[in-house]
Length: 456
Ligand code: AMP
Ligand code: GLY
Image 1: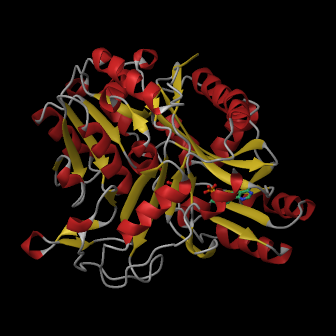
Image 2 (image 1 turned 60 degrees about the vertical axis):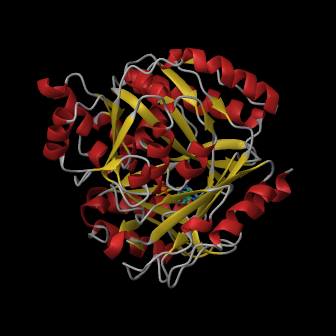
């Protein structure tokens, strides 16, 4: 296991000097990159990749924003046969898988098993590795086996329901119940009352989240502040990318329903060198050791959802992809040839890649459709793109309507991202631009990053 040294970016001049030496390192050896997915994460990945020399970016299926940085292809991210065909016809060199579902469905194994795709590199873990996200029970067993700090838990099926109920009785409230499988981000219940928790345990095992809750993980509640840590690994080497904080609730002050994410900030002030050192020693290294010991083929992103419990990190969850909207903030802070980095990663040569973290703060504010995360309208015309300045507006749920106008096409619509020397400055820029965009019913949180302003 070898750590990739990243330029720490303490002063602007140092960063500029470093960047200049980088220009000489860049050896783009490929041309065609295919990004799978259609959200803000994929726009941010495609945007960053398109900045590399000599690269063509294709996005399948993409959105109105990805069309500005590459070529959208009318192929769904889970249509393996069409993706295969496209890789052959367009001579794709590298595939970057955005969402988790194709990974859990085994797209990496599919590529490895196909002679015609032997030369196509792919970023993502194999099907077994994807179980780190696809099965919470698997992820918890993995963490226990490799001594990775996480909440105490019990996995329950209808077979050991009574044991599950007794385990719940030994815990203090609130009670955490998690559907084992993928449940579109909705499979976690946090309940204050023991009787309700027992009732919900029955409901979940009875099919509340379909097959995803045939198994339920009951967990101890961890009190603390969450942060998303991103690692890129080729299975041997690893690089810790900029961390980010995500804002999950719909309303200001963390109120209301859970969403896919209403904004992000990177870096996170409580992720000091000391805290990140603990993350690396206690979590990143044992996770990599586990991946190697289990002989998982993993060339991709590991997204570690952490709880900072009084200065000590505990893993809440693994994801096998980048986060959304975290990616929109993280990509804004990566300096260097990202296409080269992913290409080297896919070849098991991540140790040869170099990149820097931009020392500025990125703030991403997600503009969403009125009514989201419940029912909302689509196809609403969006205005104001021409007035944006000093920001990047990553498209999450957009499409081209009649007359090629950009229209809304999802709950999360636009991830407006700005960089600033401080959180305050980045916030000011991001919100100044958010106010220039209009569509009927547009909603956003006003407090992204505000909680972190007190951490200095
Ligand atoms: P997950 O899908 O596992 O990330 O869970 C969704 C959300 O539930 C997390 O982002 C946390 O906010 C919360 N959560 C999950 N597990 C715990 C836990 N053991 N203690 C406290 N909060 C949790
Ligand atoms: N923002 C959280 C996630 O992508 O799962």
